[in-house]
Image 1: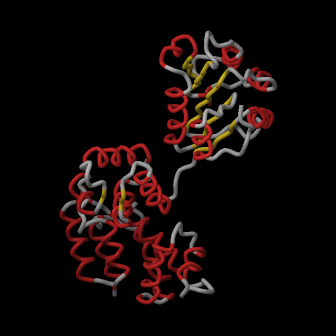
Image 2: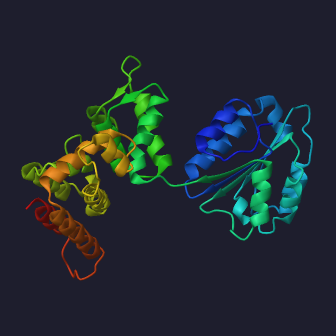
Image 3: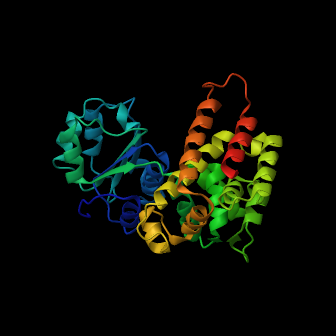
Length: 342
């Protein structure tokens, strides 16, 4: 058995692949993707197929008590090194006393996986949390921030021996969003469609296989605004006005707000002309994204950026019906882009 440690997704998967198993994995949090990845890996890889009928069990928190789970965990495997016990909807188990008692001395031959989605353990259950940490792994699966999505896309593809350029990462992340299950589903479609002799993803490939235009998308709109390219920005806005399914104000506002909010922060960087220093100041994963802020600081004054942030907030409120009886979303977006660029 491996020693208990602070749990990150990569560390857990590394130990699982090395067959270093813990008596309990409590998987909780708001991002179901990582919970499913860990639980599914354990279900598919700990036991060989022929041992699963007698030694692998799936229970649901709505159907069992903590005492029943503890009793199941105390069973010894039949002609196998391990038994795997997976409890889905673990948050529905209310009284955890029996599990706390079991975790004081858990069987090393049982791998208990508790799946608790869309939330975390009640903060008042300190003893339960303590027992889990002492016996095994307590993992919190958190939603990724928007800025973390492009690196996630790049890493996902790299691990599957496929290269992808930064622009394609950004387009995919911004068009699909932070639902990692949907995002990885679209990436899998790309991987299947790519020819064996050319494992590269480009904006042209994204447009063809995912349906996001390489010329008219949120990435290109942001780029046009950063560079104060009035003609291109208006072209893109006109395209979205005529093709509302391709993009809308609710997609663009968070993107623009995040950029100008970070641009405001960039002005306060003591070494804003140093790409690495600015990347660290803005908490960027790499210096690649710094270029946008260097250009932005040349094209927009600090005062203008403050005014833009205020205008974005106003537009967001109007898009939700506040002080806006009848202006359509498309017109609000055109008004905002005009304000930013002039």
